[in-house]
Length: 300
View 1: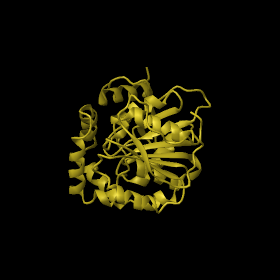
View 2 (view 1 turned 180 degrees about the vertical axis):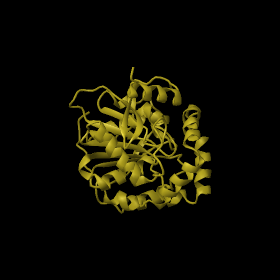
View 3 (view 1 turned 180 degrees about the horizontal axis):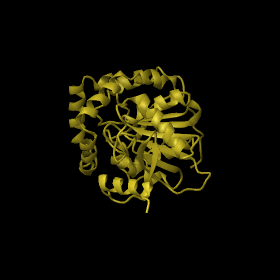
View 4 (view 1 turned 90 degrees about the vertical axis):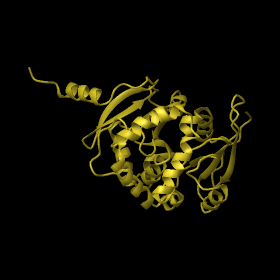
């Protein structure tokens, strides 16, 4: 009897990637450029707006789930592990920001998604602005949470120190989520990816954005420059960038402050004014820059 290659591939993936704690999103696989890509997906009506979450440096989409799951009741939610990361297959020698942006586009092709809003954390933010550079007609809105990769993170020893400081500011549970991903990603890939990040023209691409863009920053994030530099950079933009600060948050906001972040994203997606998070949260939200983005006032 002939073997079923699809079942054989599934058994191989199951052996290579043991089960994680269950998510409310369905766990699925697809193929992107010959690479097995793992992703999570919500079940929504066909007319639901699509929102795709892109992970950070060396990580998988797993740590993005706390925020993604909160938004999944309203948005058709996709959380892929990009090729070379997490449970997805290796991506060969290609590990740079343009490669990942193109992979994200081909992942969306595989899912039959023409347009989407993108929510990224850390390295996921340069991937988003590169995606916008190549596929502007496919991007509806951009949410950049704790964007990384600028000159503030250079050289490598400085970035390592920043990551070490950030580790002490994140919830302890983040260690159990991130450590397996970092170990699987490996040291050689880390150096290649860091080199690609330092060479990427993040500011230039950000200023080229022509879609409504939300930037969310944490006041305790050691990987980002101080408020003065952030305001200086933001002031160069005359387009659609809204910069919001979440008090008390460090770098992995999608994991540490999901309720607050989901609240901010919902307001932004509906063109509503950014107001403080619900009363059950102690965190405070405030704007530090608003470009040509004009939310619709409401009576709520």
